[in-house]
Image (cartoon, rainbow, N blue to C red; front, side):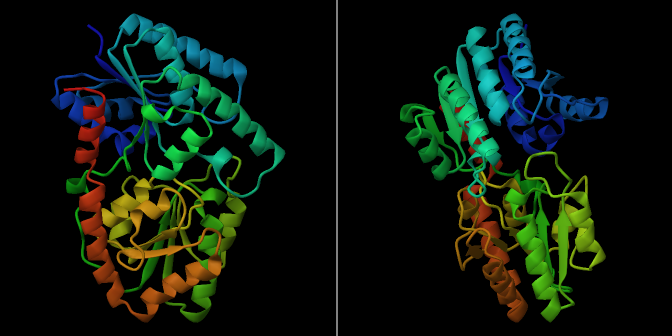
Length: 375
C-alpha cells in the first residue's frame, strides 16, 4: 500500500532542518509519508527514515534556472510516480515543486493538492530589475498561474506574499491561506542565558546579496572602527544563485578582520549560544527560519521592515526594524545594544515569548493539517 501523504521538496539536506517536525506529526497520525527530494545521501535517508518512519525517495530536479527539458523530465517523473503510488494528499514546498509537483499531481489525479509558498525568491525581490530578472519573473508568474489552477490550497507564510499573489492573479483568494511561518520545535531550541562578552552580532544565511550579506559586512566594518572589541559572525555557505556573493569578496572581509566566516555547521545552536544579537538584513523573506530559531533561544533580532522579516520583530520590544539596504540604520540599531547591553537580556526574553506565541511548529503544523482535513 502506498503512502497516504506525499511531500515534494527541492533539496534533501533541508529535510532534517525544516520538515522533520511536520513529518513526525504525520507519522503520529499513522501515516508513513513519502518524501520526494533530490540529493539524498544514505546518511540523510537513514536520519529521516529512522527518526520518523517516513520513506525518502529521489526525483530529478534542476533547482535553479529555467531549463524546459530538465523541468519536463521532473514533471513526467513525478506524474508517473504519483499515478503508481496513488496518494490521497500531496504537499509541495518552494517554487519548482509547487509548480511541477502540483501539475504532476493533477495529471495523476491526486485527490488533494496543496502548495506552500515560503518566499518569492530572486525574481520577486525588490532591487535590480534587469532583463533577466524580468524574464524569469514573467515565466514564473505564468507557471504559477497555471499550476495553482489545480491546487486546492495554497499556503503563505506572510500576508504580503499572499496579497501579491492574489493581486497578480496567480492564485484565487479563496484558495489562499495565511500560515504565518513554518515554526520551530521549541523544545529543541531552548532559551539560553544572554551572551555579553564579547558582544557578538551574527548572521546565518546563504551568501546571497538579497540576504543583506553586504550590508552586514559594511555595518561590521563601520562598527569595528569605533568598537574593535565587538565580534561579527557570518555563518552560511556560498551559493550558485544569480545574487551569490563571490568567495573572494567574503574572504577579503575575513582577511581585513571585519568578520569571521563559518561556511558550514551541522548545528547553528552552537553559534547562537555565542550570539548576543541576531541580524538578518534581508530584502524579502517568507518568514525567516533563522530568525525564529534565534528568537526561540532568547536572542534579540535586528531585521528589515520588509515582507516576511517584519513578522519576527515587534520594533523596540524584541529587537529593531531597519529599512532594507540602509547600512547607517543597521549600524545605529547595533549601537543601541553596544551603548546599553542590558537590552540583550530584556529583548531576548521578549523574543522567546514571541516565538512561543507565533512560531511553535507543532501548533502551525496542526493548523496546516487541519486545513487539509488530515485527521
